Image (cartoon, rainbow, N blue to C red; front, side, top):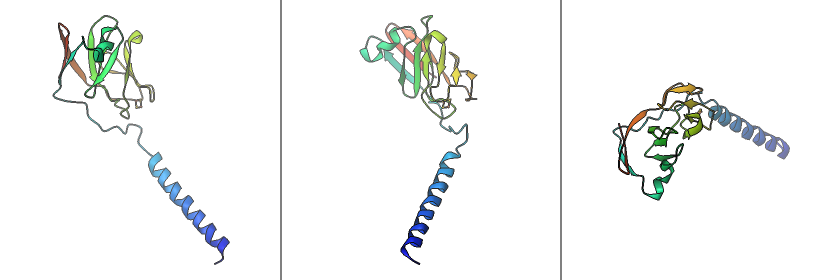
Length: 140
Ligand code: FES
């Protein structure tokens, strides 16, 4: 074997390895997210603190403990699991549209977490909320 044949063999080997890796990594199932929503939740947020200030604005939202908490345009507080049920990307709240939206592939969820557009097919988990003075409680 001369040098040219040797390099050709190495090049072919590297290409084969790359192709095998890509095929394995690219063949992920469309609904590959297998995470679970937080359970036994009991979180209190002080809305007078700057860190929670986004919840003082209609349409504002924040993340805490794997949960997205939002204030609707009607002034109520809602909370659902943060991870999109499609592949686990954090959903966002779109106040004017009254929905949760996944920026990854465009799935949308209602204010209660129900799927309104795919590719997600499983609802976000909804949590209870109650407001006592400045303390917002999120619980399951
Ligand atoms: S991760 Fe795909 S729609 Fe959310």
